[in-house]
Amino acid sequence: MEADEYNHLRKEHNLDWMIDELQRRSRDKGLPDYSLRALREALLNNLSIAKRTFEEWQPPQVRDMFRH
Image: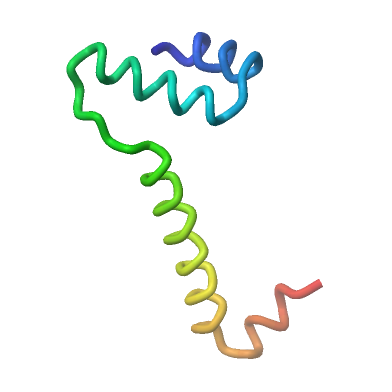
C-alpha cells in the first residue's frame, strides 16, 4: 500500500477498520498474519514503561527543569 492510498483510506475510515484492512491484505498476499492490534497495544505499553522509567531515572534537578 502506497502512502497516498493509506492516507486516503485513513481519512475515510477509523483505526479499527484500517487494522482489519491491513491484516486482510497481508493474508491475501500470503504475508505473515500478525495481530496488528496486539502489536499496537504492546508498542503503546512499552512506550508508557519507557517514558515512566526515563522520568524516574532523571535526577530531581533535571525533572524540575522540564516541568511547566
